[in-house]
Length: 392
Ligand SMILES: Cc1ncc(COP(=O)(O)O)c(C=O)c1O
Image (cartoon, rainbow, N blue to C red):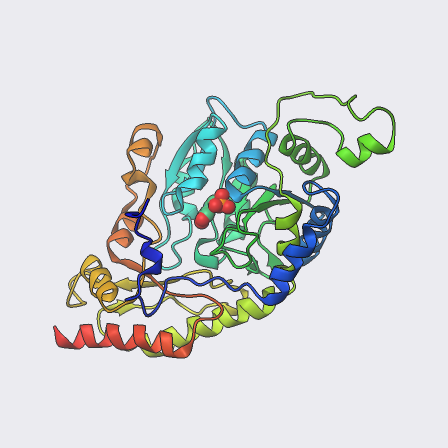
C-alpha cells in the first residue's frame, strides 16, 4: 500500500486542473443530513429536485445517481434499444455513447463544428438512417448547441432528443435553459461540474409520462415510493411492471446539491470571469486560438479549451502539455474522440469523415478553470504559455 503514489498530492503542482468549491455551509449541511430518518430517496431529494426544476424552468425533474444513469434511463424510458441507432457527437466524454450501448442500441458518431466543438447539424443529417431513433446533443464545455437547427431536424425525421447537459448547468439558448428543448435533459453533479453532489445526476423533462417512468425505473421498477407505501396499505405490496435499476440519489448528496445550487449564479460568474481573464491575455499570442465569447452570459464556462494551432505555435499540443506539467501546471484534453477508442471502432457507426473532431483532437488543451481559481494562478498559466511561445 505504501507504494501507491497520490499524483494529485504532487507538491510540485502550482496550479491544479481543478479545485472543488465546497464551503463551510456545504459541509455543515452534509453533516446535518446524516441526522435524517430516511437516508435515501427522501424529503431532501424531493426538495433538491424541486429547486433544480425551478432553476432550469422545467415541469419535472428526477434525481439519479449520476449523469450516465440519467442518459441510460432516458433512452430506456423512450423505448430505445436493439437495432436502433442514436446519433452522438464524436467529441464527447465516453459516457454519452456508453449510455447508448447500455440501452442496447448503436451509437452513430457525428462530427462537431470547428468553432463551437458542438455536434454539427450537417453531420447529424448525413448520419440519419431508417434506424435512427434519437439525437443526443452535448452542450460542449458549457456552450449551447444550436437547438433551433437540431429540433428542426428531430421534428422532420420524428426523432427523440436527449440533451446531454453534463457541462451545462446554467447554460441557456435563446433565453431558455438547455435540457428543456428535447424530450429530456441529463445533468451531472460530478466533482468538477458547475455544482457537485460528488456523484449525482438529474433528468429533467416537460413530459409527465417520461418523468414518471424515469422515477419508477430509477428505483428497481417499483411503482410506488416508500413514503406512499407506508402511508397506505401494506408497504411490501408494490407492483413491478418492468425491471428497473438502482440509480437513486441519497439524502446526503441531495442536501449537498441543495446547498450548492444556492450558489450556482455566483460560481458561474466566477468561472465566466476566469474565462474572460484567460481570453484577455491569450488572445494576442501567435499560434493559439481562444474560445469565442459569443453569448458568454448564457455559457456555463465549464471548460476553457485553448487551441494550439499546428505549424503556427512553436511546439505541439502534447509537448505543451508536458512543458506546462513540468512548470507545475496541470492541464488535460477534452476529449479523445470516440472513434479513437477500440470499442467505438468496433461498435460505433459513422457516415461522416469526422474531420473536425480528429483535427481538433491534436490541437486542444483544457486549462485550469474553477470558480475559486486565483488571478495569480491564471497569471502563472498565461506567463508560462507566453514564455514557451517566445523562447522557442
Ligand atoms: C459530456 C458528459 N456526459 C456524461 C458524463 C457522465 O457524467 P457522470 O460522471 O455524472 O456519470 C460526463 C461526465 O464527465 C460528461 O462530461
